[in-house]
Image 1 (tube, helix red, strand yellow):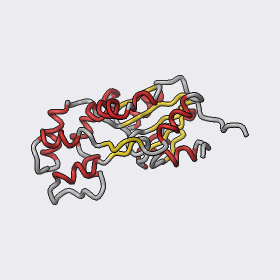
Image 2: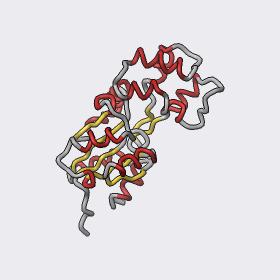
Image 3: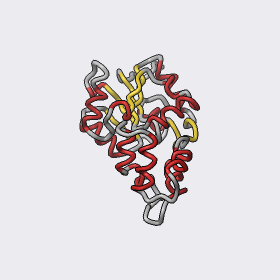
Length: 200
């Protein structure tokens, strides 16, 4: 049986698709009763995380800003110590999926991420070695689902956006990618991505 045809570029979000992360528990550790920690929205929508993931502020300024913005019950240093390592490893099957794709198409990542998490994920997981191209919000200066972020990502290759298949675990990021012309899909973990690619 012949292998399924693949898009010219397969572009993955990291947290929630390739890497198992747990930011909600970090916020919950220090949260006041004013923050709903049942989901990660309290921190994901914060102005401080937006600025940090766009590379507009460094770790020290971010620590001070997020503690103040979310009224956390800790010092900036305490938060940063807990915040730096939020990953719980690669999802089962992620390494195999990426390795299998690497010999057949261009594999890239596009992540809303900050310098601390990228450094820890490269150190602990070797995540950088799985991708030919790394598009990182803190280097790009843009953050998904902003249209400018997807347009800047598309400019990395001499491809039409529709030739890029993109996987993300957040609906708004998928919607942003679709609006930019990407072949975008919601995928919580590597299993759904593999199924959409016809690899299951």
